[in-house]
Image (cartoon, rainbow, N blue to C red):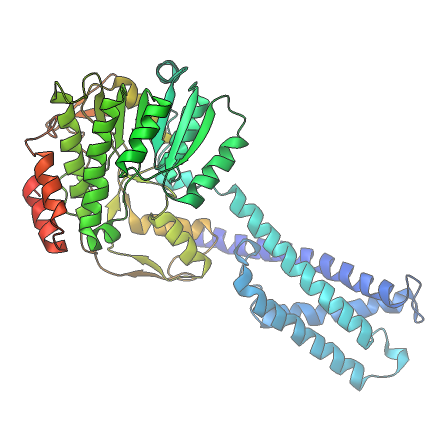
Length: 495
């Protein structure tokens, strides 16, 4: 009961503040219209009649806003979708004022109805002012919105002297540098003492954006854009030979579960084979550390994406056991973590887009849960794990998983709407390859602690299985269909 009373009082207070602000805006618009109409001189009927005339204009315009429902939404929820509503409100107000002028033509009644010209000018100015202020306020509140609150936990700061020491004066190559995780890797590596950052990305626009950002970032590191596909052997070997990176952070991958599920052979080639080949080429080029960004979906995988990443882990860690073939001296590691807030292809930008259109917000299942981190937090921990780099799979402790429906509700409230009232939420059903709960190997039976409280070593995942790279490459070369690829992956990773 107390919460309802508080909510009602807040509603009344915000509407009163809005009413006062609208009165000021309409008054300024009316005064400007009068001054423009009479060339900044006193009207022929005097200032007192002009002020009384504003009372009529104010009442008509406020009632028009109320009748058309403009006051149902607070300012922070007013968007471009509401422009027709406000346009209709002021058109209605102008029609009423025009009718008053028509039925009351006597100049002595100027204090009751404004002339046609002032009605037109003041309506246009008031419409622009009231809607413009609302849109500006919404933009301001959105700029102040902190999506990290959606984590439902405190974000922990990461990074330290060990990371700076590892990167100081070195050349670091980042693949997938235009993606959400790859771009943040570039930022943090450049800020933490690296001499040069080689940004490898096959998407031209994505590479252009991170290159433009880093040019204006004021960092000491030289950031070099390289438009390249990691599966292109000749290109990557030339690139590695030219820049001689000491560290490679491999973030390039197909990560969108439904897309990889629909294109399993391409997922196998890009996520598994290209990763293994890149690791071999890096070994031949004398790279000291190779860190692959993996995923929590590689734990007991059911999706094609998860299985391709798990198989990539196995093949990559297998290089640690080789005594020849150019891999000597290179340490290969993998780092697993869950979803990153706001990353491309994740639910956060999707929900944001759906909320902007007033829904419906689509959630697959009421009990769907996922682990989330901010991109800064995740990448900081990746670099901490890279410092340890002893040729194994690391898992990041991401706290408790978040129900996706809770995330959707929080985002709706954060945008100023009421879930299920202003913005509906609909459940669409679990998609192929999805699990209700993702897993992280941080239990005593499957992982052991490191010197870092939030980084674990996956003992259950092993250090590379008995899957032969040649068998995987030969299978992919045979152009198998999608179902054959899924069977092959399930057989190789035990899914």
